Length: 402
Image (cartoon, rainbow, N blue to C red; front, side):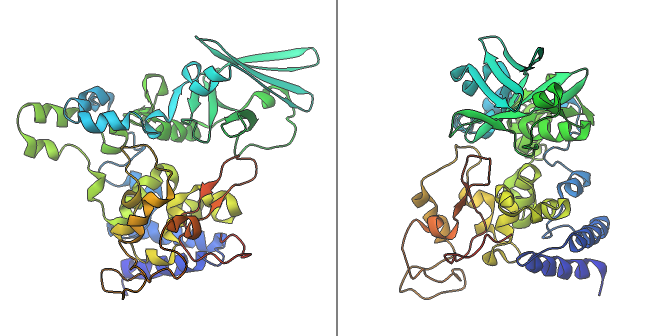
């Protein structure tokens, strides 16, 4: 059998294996297999790593290939798409990053502090600045926080710059307790020094990826330069640089203009979920990075969890991220509002399954489906309950499926 066919079969096998336990060896072999498939051009319908998508021709989130002059800006988009722009301005993604001093969380909690062994950390925010100070005995250092990553729905993480390098603050603000705690992913042990208590230096690649998902146009012309980026996920973070599109539309050539902008809504189901996974991590991103073995912590990666669902199969447009979430509007938190999405596949009690509704009726309830089939989990130290997108029949007492 040819390479693409072999890889497709292996992809299916690896996905089934993940429901039990994926070893690192399987993950690495899968990555090599998909890399070979990538080189043949047979990509559609196969979950890939974000790096593979970025290397492919055409637009993809976080790509950073286009020069800055090709970006039009959100205001230009709003001239024709005013209704969408108005609702998107209230969405969480639009505020995925803000200058730290402009953070609503920091402005509201203008004096925050936490004791870490001998180190006393505090963040003091005024109208013009937000400053982190770490002290111990007779020593003290201060760092001006420049960026707040995260809208604050769960919390915020802060970034500062020192000697040309970017640092992720050791402490983040968490919304539920309205307090500081250790930034997710950093060690919870007592820091070894004042510098360690202040923050962790990010590699340039890590900083590029963080800014790439929280800001717009932080990497242009393949050069990482966040100082001129636009805070938050703007229109062009998902639809690609729009300057040519704006010009052609203004000249009255909509046919040509449509070819100069990217429409994620036209992607096939697998690519559509991978598209969101560029920042929320694709199935392959999680497997290749080893996050599959982190237990309940991988509940944060919705695309990975979704594609482990039995009903996902080889991809179904009724199960993509866009089937339940409108990216141009704030996240809906009412469980009942998602029932209609479930009923696109499942029949109601008493009805028979048919070709376009292959899902059985629930024998227990007729509404609020997600509260049972997509339970919430709170990973230790994150102070937030994440919805598990691994859709399944949840049996009481059964362990969290990795």
